[in-house]
Image (cartoon, rainbow, N blue to C red):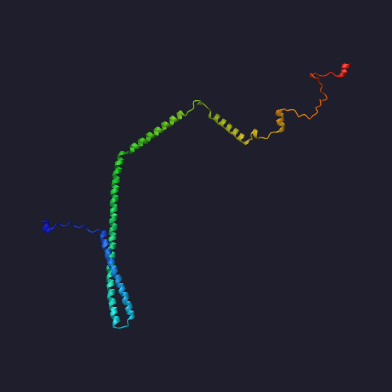
Length: 232
């Protein structure tokens, strides 16, 4: 039976907006080519009319030029109509692409919303608040432990704070005095002070004379007896 009547042909898919736009654009290009051809004929008739004297020949050229001009205007009207159709198709294509983008956006948002709901089921605000409270309590206990471990055993608890402040002020005053005064090891030495500290005798001059009131001594260091007292 299929050989006699033939198989049923499948329906062709409807043309898309892009297909329609391409077809109309191709027709518009054909019309433009025709208009350019008529423009060339009009320019040629115009030159011939200028060169021809008034008379039957010139009138014949004018009638041909009028016919070509009418065709040109007809093609221009068709071209404008095709341009309008192309503009409408572009608008429809833009709207269609916008709808497709909106559909994809809605699909992505629905998927994200579903995923977010599933994640929110596993996270509860009450659990987060309870965890935060527990963390704060643990931090307080940790601080107390650190303070207890860092406490010194040698410092008594009954120390007078005013007495400590007085000692601190005195230390600051001593530090200020020491910082403003020049250390002794940086001060210049004085000869008199150096001599008095060392207590050294004066250097000899060459001839030493005994003091007039000092009694002479012998070889053994005993005082000598004057000769006059011996004679007597």
